[in-house]
Image (cartoon, rainbow, N blue to C red; front, side):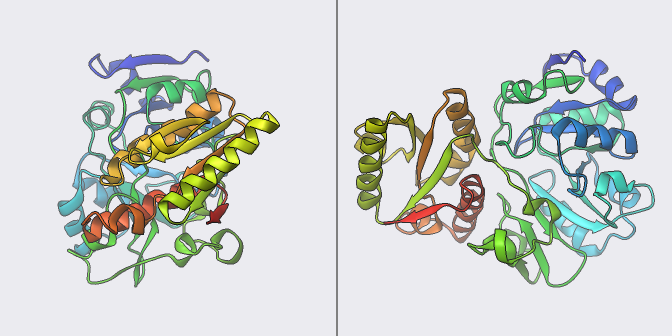
Length: 358
């Protein structure tokens, strides 16, 4: 299969035809690039799983461009779901509701629920409108690898596996949408993201986190409500360790370990904040962003992990970007604090929960 690349300012006619005939098109959103197929076509969903090497019990998110689509996709749509849609769509929020008979089990990973969102991206909405289909789309990467935030990342993983890629440049937020389960009380966030509990509680009375996504030993002790969260995600090829503690203690520890690695012939990468990057004496230092602006960190995280892969790095050390550090002394809002937790969720999974406290 030859994978074609279509620029966002070009015609989407060919991409729309591909989707309508059951093919696959990767496209940009405000979060990460998605790997799209016709959500109501079982064969398209099977192709998505095959292209990604994705476990078949990991549901796909259905992307829409009009709130009225909820009536077609969902068996019932409570009033609070409409209120969330009106407040946060288009945007990085995925809602889980009871599925209608129109949605095949191949798209929902065998579940009686469906995950739906409306992306806040010109290219994604254009593709949805011109194709006339609801688009099932997980991230457009091979399963387990860091999610793609550029078309080049998608091409690296998916060239020859899918029909087309729409190149919309770099994405904005850089980590996947928040997923909230609205099928039973208490409503629970199954995957943290840019839309935080504080924001959701402007519409809902109470929102909790699924305990399995916030517990440090979740991979061992708790079964997440979202099937996909039990799988390995976002991981670079190199061993990644998060170093957590007082800022200067973290810098000193990383410098010491890098020095030992150099003596051992290990190529070492460092993920640092803008504010501390110049304190490292050796190693390949990459700046994630500023601790004063969590979005700068989410925007660059996956790209940094992929660049270390390209450079055949042996070991990676990352500073911690936890709530206390990103918001503690910076006057950050409660929403910023929760978003910092979403960033750490991705970084912790990429590190396989390998955290060193100093």
